[in-house]
Image 1 (cartoon, one colour):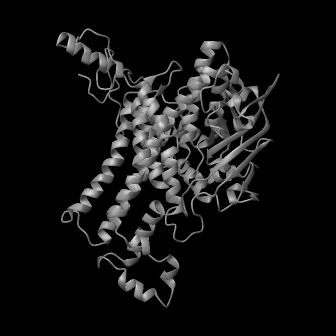
Image 2 (tube, rainbow, N blue to C red):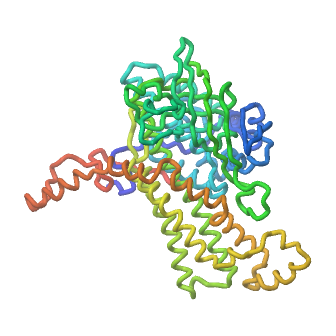
Length: 535
């Protein structure tokens, strides 16, 4: 009997767990996969036009204001070289046979999606937001959309994209997703805007490529990407075909300008987490940027552009689930440390235990949606899979709206000292140091420095400017809660529930002979296969 864990409408065709490789294959893997330091160094070969706080940046790789964001991306490179994490952080690309970083891999089955989900959680519980999973989400969406476009219109986008994909994987690049347009007047469609450049669009079609203009308003990690994947952010009508464009643009292409914010809180002694790890975002302005045909993956196909947008949203919301579960791990760990440092015992102080259980329940409930979305994935004609849309959107909706509850619980278990804790400069003030050390001690066996550091860690993650920023990207990253609600309603089989009740009322029994439902929870005729669990 197939177990409920198996994907009902998909038999896992292949598992991409990295198997024992020959020595030659291992050498090839080492050549293809960069380390974190190699990634940092690779940024120096680019010369993007970047502004931050009104200043032109001379070297992104060496500017301390971007260091926390670069550190976050670097984790995805370094973990791919660590034996303990290689099974999650690498995979074999089926179209080339090459071992590639998980963040650049095209998913073939449920196991791939589970591995990606767990890999994102792993790197984000270290870095808060490792950012590079957006590369994965964009590549998977374009892989599927280009195949669909070719099948419908007889275009050659898919082979073009495959060549680009293999180049990206071989060079082990990090790609920024330039999807969210500035949008202008939200009540108007792109072609109705008084200022056309609030959406990126094709300005000119040439024999050797296209010229694009416009502004993408929110691009994660923009300054320290290697290239941008430009993608449409909505479904366009036929008259707005020039806005349905997808292409790849180097970060330092002529005509590209990035206006960025600092990553994290670099240089702040009180920032126990975000001084080391953070995330920059940037507005990216495309001012008559030429894109050769080999890097153009959509150029006016409006229906397929809409599919690309929704496909990306589903992949990205699935990834966000793993990312915020990693953030939940940080809050759970800090809450447990704080409980001990305060001298409390969860066995004796039930209100603290209940609060911690609430935090665990929130984190693992939306993560469970990610697991379900992986297991119940849908096969795509391109030969890849996409996470189940209902579970992906429910999981993302939960984390988007529950992030504030997660902060509240962390505040509850930490106590009120996080409000008044003096800054770290007071730790070395000869006039106050001794007195503060005496009164800020908690349990005798836990050093006061550990208690203060944990409080500052929680402050950094839940109270600081950086904490508010994490809340906003949790709420709106990957689309607003309204967008997720629409996708849940659009994909959920409400009509079948209605039919079920009609059958029961009319006949008194449920007709077992009706068609097989895609509803998660009912088995298909095809049968299932349980994804392999990593040891």
